[in-house]
Length: 73
Length: 396
Image (cartoon, rainbow over all chains, first blue to last red; front, side):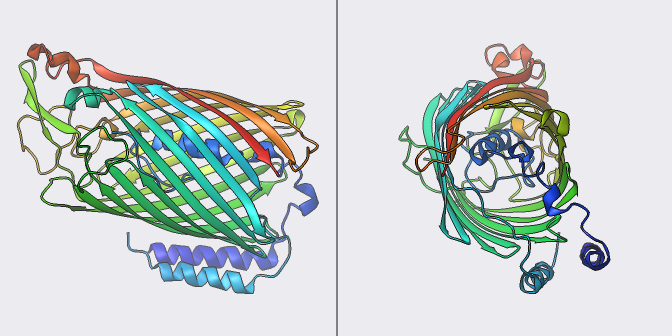
């Protein structure tokens, strides 16, 4: 079922590309490229925060960093 | 979760070889970051240096090296209940490469982490593809890690003891990012992680921490401890939604995030996070708030009725029900903004967070160690911590 949903989603997305025009032009992306819009502007700091929470909570994944040990015994 | 990942690979390479040159994706910035970090709370002090270097070795290839150290001095509640305070060191190193081909970015990285009682090696692969006029990005990745779990036999920070458990970990990731307007973006992420532990030499250790114990006894009478018993497998799924919005008036940005997590141990959690980034002439200020709540694992109890009551038994506070909140602020001072020698620009950064964790069903069992009548009715445990980062960043 999940596989079917993925395939249907992909068909929807890619077939949509042929009839739908990108609505934000390259020259309109100045604000989007501003450093303040980067949620992980400094990767070394973002990685550290992720590590601090990951070692004290059960949730994991769908974040910014993978790998490493714990250092939490 | 049985997904046929060959479908992903087929879609991926179809995208890869049918894409045309256009508004190409870009490689990460060339920069070096040098940081010192500190965590102080719950009887645990963790500090150390970190270094991250990223540079281009060709017009379409970027490489990075990361060096990170945790110097740990622990007299946590777990240590006080199960042994004596200790010092140890964890050293993590990563290398990786990003390769750009038109609108496609591929990356490969390897991470090695060493402690005197834990070794972890992780290999990660990833690929992302921009399309639809570069308004959309599809990414996916896979990681495989092998962890080796031991236990300390002395206080030598880097001597690994005999292996108690061997863990194979696999991560499957997929993400989709979309530019919504000229001021806003949104992204969705999904990650499935599986763990398979193999006990070594009849140690009784699988995915559990060999130093932790479960507790059993009679409330108001006594509390005893025994080695935890964990399942040997775990599968978790996490879904995240993140968004960013640029505020024209102040040239600032708001970031927000919601994540939902659940695993085969019965743990479910929610994370909400919001941050505001405000730039001055030479300064950038970050203000952030994060809320996290978690339900307990099916096999968690603060105090079981008797030893070996169930097949699996745990009393890790990380598997209990709790709420965690953190508030933080960062300040970045930018220098050499117009370049200086080989430097394009630089920044000095200071970050401070306060973390507060309130446990719903993990009691401070230290209170009943000298007075058995307090067993099972001790105060609920809370943890408060100060988190500091100071680092310098140089772009070149």
